[in-house]
Image (cartoon, rainbow, N blue to C red; front, side):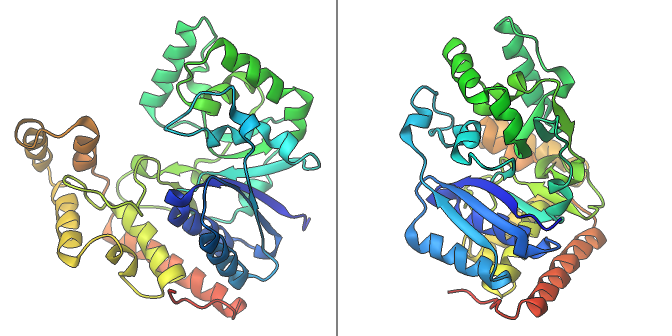
Length: 356
């Protein structure tokens, strides 16, 4: 079937660069980009940024549609802020926002799609509330299960899912009054750990279709060594487009993100990272990342971070995070990005791989 593939994502001006890579990678790696309809819940994206995204997507294929949706304050008035805003709760209101839509593909705007979006679109069955991957982060699962137990609720256990990339069944959500029940839930339990993800794990229990992990891989948890494709990478906690200070390194996974950005946005190798750091800082951050992969060196960094540099936990985690990929595997991923982007350029001669 050639029905439109409805995609939803959320972003504000601070996440625009992530949104642009997310949307462009979905379009370039799609089997048929003409089917894509991007619905963006707009948390403050500038008009010039909106125009830039729409132009670039329609250069991939002129039939790609982009819609920017202004959130209504009434959606969130009874919900607690999460990381400073309430935009994430938009997912709970999708049955009303799109009253004639049966399903929608949601993804965070910090993802890189090196897999066809059609692979996920085809997975949902009529009795599924959601298609999502079991959350691979042990700390998140433990925190959430503890929260459920403390509040006298049955914990999800190992079935706890991450909703950062998901297929949502809007028909199921309407039939099970998710909007109404979410309001009741948050009124009873306002100290949510993970906002609407906590709510969905409670309300959708027993109606979850497991997503293949290649369609949602947390970049920080990717195994060392090879990186098989196709794959969708979720840069939770990394945000490659944000400049880091002091202890920050540049991981192999971040290099993959920037390589795609080089090709699809700037048309020049190294241009994406050059927006953040001078050349000597790039070299130093990469050197520390590679050095930290050597046995024994990690312990030295840990000592320095705790005793000498006095870094906080987040900075120390960034310094100590080691996830090297074999050089041959990196080259293979880079080549796939290059050939796929080049093929899409030939299919869509409107694409101009140059920066504005």
